[in-house]
Length: 368
Image (cartoon, rainbow, N blue to C red):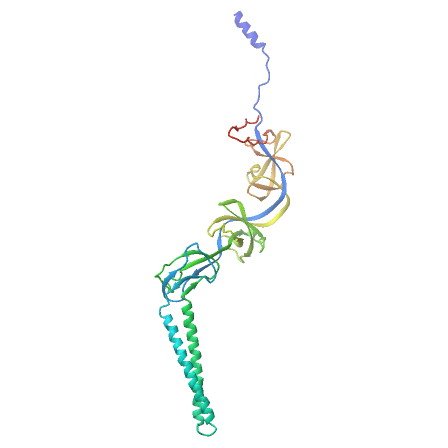
């Protein structure tokens, strides 16, 4: 009994203090920056060649040779394929022979007409015979002129057996091989040629932004293959009417592609600059929360986080414009604010230090 009382007395004499509470949550912050913010209309796009041509034959015949293949660069006027001329070459030779005969007939008719004119005053040649000689001469001239037209037509058909490139570009598709019958409805296309030094995309713009899209507006396109390299372009034309199924209007953007880094068929994301907000307030996108269609941020001051409702402006992907609710230079929370209440105490994590070079670098201890 005496021992128990002694122990109880010793316990009651121990100093007592307030229980230790949990430390405030650790948060990360960023300053409200001021910068010029572009207001953009964005949409997914696919790249298309600025010009694409299907090359076929005007002459019905069999394909003798195809001199290029897929991916080959071509120049305007370059020979791409040959079609067997068939009887076209024979037609040209026949017409040339007929022309030689027509020339001889003209010489004879002219001589007869000149002789008739000389003998007509003396009465040896009658008026009817003079008219007949004149008509024969005129008919010979007309016959030669008709043969010249026939020769031009046959020559053009013979020239059409040589398939030439209509423009500078690359062979996009080769559809037929030698031996195929061309010039018919069954095989209208031999090759497809595309021009890729300039590519175009069509940006679908909604009704809200359509009135601000103008010809000449700056644009940029990014692709997944080169995410850190945007490609600059400009709006060259805007469709005059909305698509009734999507309620959007197409803005055509051209991009230079001299190095052929981009290819038709690639997928990208385009943005057309509609306006620029000067000296706008910007915060990281991670600083903004949305609940019940209201956006808000936590502002850090004197070790406490105060919740503020904000009005959003332009969306830059990794940043958001704040039209109202914060001031330049204020510190907003970008992480660690889960389950925070308005006015809750917080601790700000120090900036992460870069790890020292070399394999012996170790991760730093977590901040207190």
